[in-house]
Length: 117
Image (cartoon, rainbow, N blue to C red; front, side, top):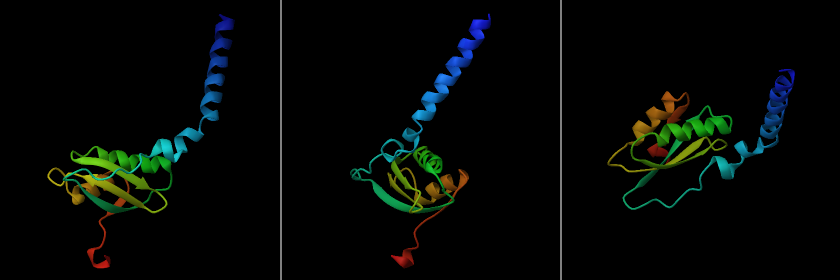
């Protein structure tokens, strides 16, 4: 019985060491973010301004909130630029719905100001 306890502890330490050694994978841009793709036929794209993101986990949260919406084909989020570029089907989803989804996930999204363009 005593040896089983040590096996459990040794296994937990080894697993913890493996996860710690590969922590770089969770923050790698190639793994965490898909490459932007050329918009498909009939799709539109919009750039949202997103405040409150500070890390790779924030980026994933915002991207998943957007991709849950029916009609969102792709979402590329950039923490440094505080932006989200979203490719979507305008027949299924609106930019206002995207802003609402991001805001519900705990961040502050807004549409670009048309006067500044």
